[in-house]
Image (cartoon, rainbow, N blue to C red; front, side, top):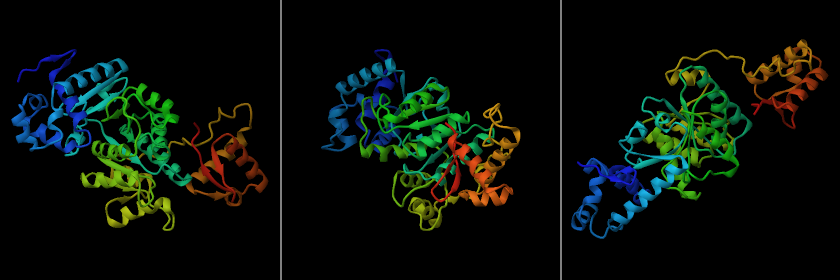
Length: 390
């Protein structure tokens, strides 16, 4: 077929963008049209009678397949280009290959990145990490441990999440800190960051070559509840595996994991205590056989087909951090305490004193320094958990 230019964009790109705008909340119809006609442009070349035959009499969408929709799409593409946002339609290079296999995949994606051509390349290995916004210290610790372990494989998987509070932002930040690329799938237009508190993180993601902010929502789309539920299918669809960190029995993380399972993708869940509401969803998925349990970093990494590498000592106290401030013996004791806390979550100060054979006062003093400097947190019961310094 002949592809004409509409402004600075091809007819096919404009038509694909228009399809995405029209059928954004009914992506299966757009997929069916694309499968039927092979591309987007022929859809807009149909006459009224042919449209009625294809879409059915009385279809609310028939009137929208018109020149006005193409003009709106072309104008949006021009605006997006000025903002540094690219639109990638199904069939174009840069549209996630795994996502294209899903019948409810969007007709296109808006990509905000310093390197939009590379960030969604077909050969990239994408792993989703999702979970509750109300992440607990247990969940945060395991989220960082999992991303650290994936980074340690040397295979550089892309960490995909939704930029939300809790699990999502922990996964994104840890990936960036570990040098991994990360993709945030947003529930707004590419020009809007939600929540606003994560604007700085979003800019870092968009500014890292190989990372990106992506969405199927047109520019200027604001944050509404239904959009967060719908965007989860994109997270699940573009990734070969989804890891659920923590979730109540219902929630966005559960929706994403369930969709990943329906797409026949690998699903993993972090088990939790039987009576912990924040682990109810994970425990349910494991019990039903929909998810494999995360029992260790090694188990997870090897289940994903990677080679697990031993811990690099990332969480040890850097000697340069306390250089000129504390003696080497104290730094060595602090490193030992950190290692014990990492291996024995929620270890109390008394237990640390017993394990290290150090006086209780010394342990309390050193742990106080570590807490002040952000290496650990100590709760009201004097139990310690690892923090990640930001």
